[in-house]
Image (cartoon, rainbow, N blue to C red; front, top):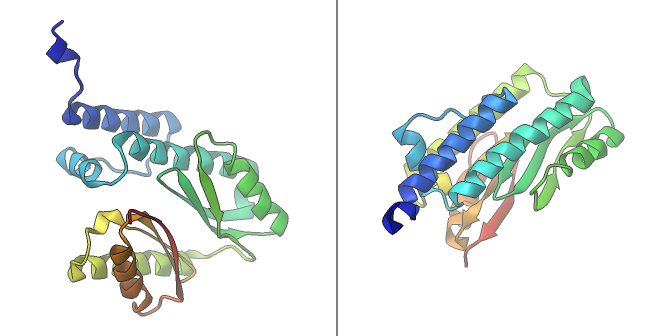
Length: 199
């Protein structure tokens, strides 16, 4: 084998990352991410996370959700979002003890750097609440796209009970723009910034 063939190109790294994500999805039995050829390659290529961390984040979300659902079942409505190995927990738990237990369970997933437990204690969200949050996330993302003030895939948007959480590896100017756009979106209760900054 020649020395040239041993070297890994960015394209090869991306292909390997995509293959790993696909394998993770198949093994876990969950399908949280739809990968579609060139579109998936572009998403990974433009992300500020390395391909390896991109894949790790998807795997951490799957593992954490599986563990929480197995242990707590109908005692929680939880959304788990991982970005650059930092996990955001949103949703509802029936008791404070369950909320703490969710965080403890998630903390057993290998590779997590930090956990933001933003779950509330109380009744679990219904279909209308979940649908409204999904709609708000879409509206905020659309406003990001229309404003063209930063590359939209650098900011992850999660909405829970009207609260918009913003994650990403960003410049401070990008964080300010994203916050301003999200906070002025009708229906948004407040904005929580969980960014990592480049400057």
